[in-house]
Image (cartoon, rainbow, N blue to C red; front, top):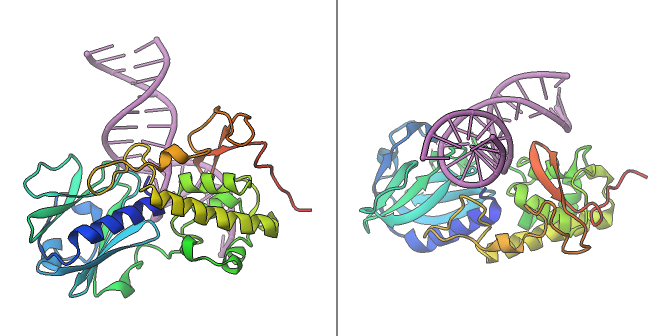
Length: 275
DNA sequence: CGCATTTCCTGGAGGC
DNA sequence: TGCCTCCAGGAAATGC
């Protein structure tokens, strides 16, 4: 379940590892995970230098020079790793980019909720055919956040909506809502200004802490060298059904909203209704 | 249109 | 051990 912190961790590590190397060939083992430019991937990327690797929302973007962008969406089980080209590839490895150092950037995604989008022509095309993306949560202002929240929709569903705010997934929504003491089913427009401010602060605090811990590993997520993240040890509500709330000791409950498991402390996160 | 719900996919867990 | 069902979730598709 790579969300913003996991994508950021991978992008930073990839940038350090492969920046300035030149892609010699690409191999696509499953064609249906590659989208965008219809030409064979090898033909599009061969001979181009990796200019930088960065993140937008939950996506990891490899920018080449001359300009081509390879956008990786990790979905839920996607991994991006750097391995010696001679090392055996894991099952479900769909795309392999060989560089001039005989290393491979490998995209592996058993559940195939992720994918690769190839855009010749550079950054201005990123996002096209990927759907419109909302604001980066770490760059949001209080005012901008309040504007996004002025809707008649459950706050958690809104936070998960990538066209509203781009980068939060199930884990960091629950963690942020808990820290801000906001019930996930509260209608966004019913949040009081102090709650809106607290929620934005919580979102930023949680995301920054998770990046510092190299992401949360529940099942599939791994860093580029294969190691797990460590932020899962700092989760306060996510995955803690029936365990005592770290703040009040009452049992954490699990409910379902927006088709997602949602963990909440019924005492610390009271529901708010319009006055 | 806006919002809620279903669907896609595989591996791991748990029941028996 | 083996077979079955269920569950995880990002985001597109579908329903209302």
